[in-house]
Length: 265
Image 1 (spheres, helix red, strand yellow):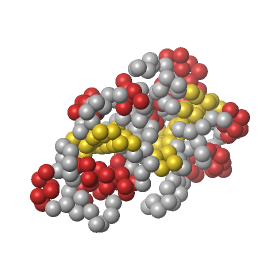
Image 2 (image 1 turned 120 degrees about the vertical axis):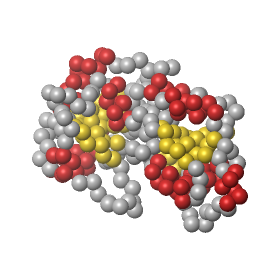
Image 3 (image 1 turned 45 degrees about the vertical axis):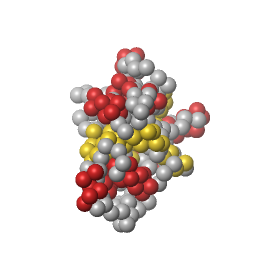
């Protein structure tokens, strides 16, 4: 948000409230009751590209819908433009919902948007959502912790933006920091990430699962190891958006995948 944005005391009295709502990973059954209630009473909903059509169908028919979604290489609105839009909408609507895939505070830039709204004097509240790093593996039959396999989990982004507080993920530390590694947005950088983990001494036979469109009816998995997964991606044309799970818990996919939950229509 730019410094030029300012709101007078009289305007603050008329301001609506912005709700940063986590839509979850896709299955509408995983949307929280509070999130659903806000969609049903919202005056305007500004939503991301990865929010599923079933979730969007829950929005009040009287609400204005604005697509602010971003995809790699295809940006609808810049982050600053999205924040400015939220401020403007709060000046004319009582209930403004910023609908974000997964959870707003887990690699969702919700913290940045909330900071800017607070700085502008706009009332704001976060409504957490189920993050894909937990839900997608669960729907694939991969528990992130298991007493026989893993007692620790690391969540990390595989797609780093320029200008952040620290330019690089320390993959060597990640390799030995926990027994399960969950990587968000890592498919495009997978060869580099796998190379770093292998260079750090992680066993090349360590199982890897890639889970695309987690919790949706078209969810698909690609199972391999650190030694094979990059070639498998190239051979199959496996693409983002996907979550990567690395660790021995992936072996449970063979046993538990048949218990996949039903996706709500």
